[in-house]
Image (tube, rainbow, N blue to C red; front, side):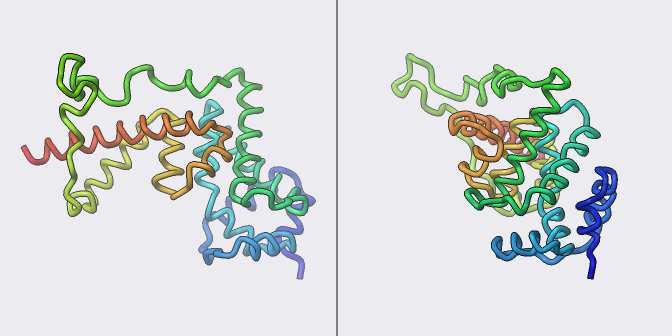
Amino acid sequence: MRSKWSVTRGSSHGGAKRYARAVENQAVAPVEDETELIAALRAGDEAAFRALIAMYHAMLVRVARMYVSTQALAEEVAQETWLAVIEGIDRFEGRSSLKTWLFRILTNRAKTRGIREGRTLPFSSLEPADPAVESDRFNGADHNWPGHWAAPPRAFPEERLLAAETREVIEHAIAALPPTQRTVISLRDVEGWSAEEVCNALTLTETNQRVLLHRARSAVRAALEQYLDESES
């Protein structure tokens, strides 16, 4: 039986775009075995492609948004990535995970589009120069313990962290972060990626990844502290 994917492989970019949008809205079963998923993709299995889109499309768009100027362009880059996956899955050698390979394709295409727009900047130039944590929360040089916490991060009660309203505060705080910080914390703390996976997918050094994650977590913690303080006063 001829699948929609077999038609897409020989179709225009517009056809692939319509197909990807259509399958995003369909319920799909989770895929747990990557080897089986790759084999299914190579066989042109439409359900496998739907599963892959369901898992990664939204995050592909968020990552692309780091490099291009509009949401529409980020969507285009993500669609180009899916087309490249369809055309290149037979050449995937398995030297990295499928996820890393997918996001490498995405970042390479997004960077190319960003260069075309004259928008590509080093990661460091996209981040604020302000410290991740206010300096007055640390002891000064004249203290017995200089540089240590003067006002350490508070411990948050678990029941408050699990409340829907608190989760909404966290989501808003993440959404308000600079794009690079937002992407790194989303991949690490929301999607559960390892530091190595993030570095490989975004072509970041370990140091850059660590700094971006620290800044993002500090900003989210500050927003959470402010919310809890205000709600308790």
